[in-house]
Image (cartoon, rainbow, N blue to C red; front, side, top):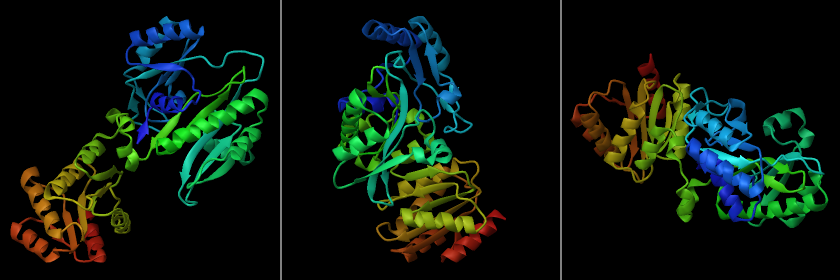
Length: 396
């Protein structure tokens, strides 16, 4: 689950990690009040207004602006709130801005040089470990740094059964060229960041830029956090951070029906039980000349209502030209899936696209009898190859 920058920063602050101070605003009036409070508390004359959406590259799309007074902060917020922000990560459709973060200026002048770094902690599935990726070149896409100057990219592998050791934190601070107060601040920053990462069951914490200020403070100017969905039951306070406005409405509907659904850009809808079979089915669709329109796993406890909900969701995609139902009955009985297909036809009405059904495993014979006796115009398939041929025929 992705969360907003301001929410990620609240997690960091709870573990003593220094961040660029700011508060959320949902109206121009709130933005002005926040700016006035920041000015009163910190004496700052410059404010940063940042659109809160689940996508990077906000500055490139006009989602990060400077204001030089509380009044200007309100003006900037009034233009930003409600706008559709398009960035390299949102796609052409963009995302509507519902909230802005009003933050204090941390690029103030002082005795020391201001420096921007990149730092992230993420799960490396190949190594079965966590990895800290960091660079003295921050404030830009890490992919650009890796392509242009790979020597500026460093990593520290962390044993998933242990922790980020202090000697590794010192190595990171040294490789970033820090010394004195800034060195000590970086080590303290990393201690808190690691604690925040582990305690929240995050799969990614990305700080870019990670700033060394002109008075040698080290703090997070921006923060991207991804939480492990499978661990949210342990963190109800983090689960409450979910923002449905930032998610695909169809995926939200699927989640409410306990369906694992991801929309893709193809033309063949698929309904499967089990992630492995789903991946194999998408390969099958591709080999048959089609393109998968979705990943949809009905799970092990699918009921007729679950299957019906799956049909409704698939059929909301206007690009779908055929549907392939590929079920291997184990925990999910084939007759329950068949009952769901029949119910979907009854309640949804005339399904105009071809539906290819392959049901194998527990109660497959009973499932076949149910569908045969229903009079529905479904296309039965017995093997993977047979299903592929019938998908191909349906698309031609």
